[in-house]
Image (cartoon, rainbow, N blue to C red; front, top):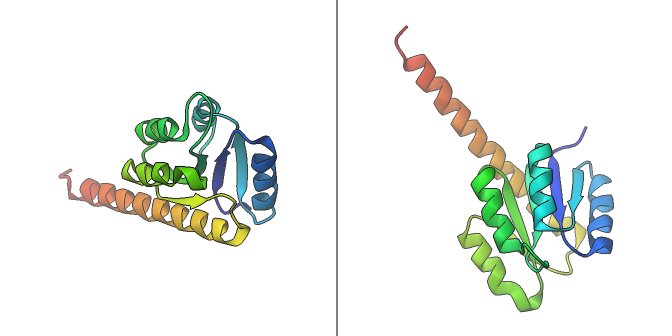
Length: 142
């Protein structure tokens, strides 16, 4: 059984497919999108826990996509992918709610560690919300 669901959003098809293949072998359920627009469609169709999001994409870039993800699915954690020239964009992404950013090229083990940490943050946050709702419900008079 997959540990959690990851959406890989990158316009570079070879990178996207290779990353999906490598992560699937590590028991992560991965999906791919080649654009911000396609990423948003995927987010509507299935439960995504963590998004690995390239900053530089034609059309709807990573920052615009991040804003939209956080607006529609605020609990979804996002890890930004940047090249050397776009480190500023990774930092901007964190200011807008991204979990963290990684520089390309990325090695598999640090990537998996970052995705797991992002998922753990999401899970902890969800559990706190659920506990607060249970306490609120229990405190209500019958």
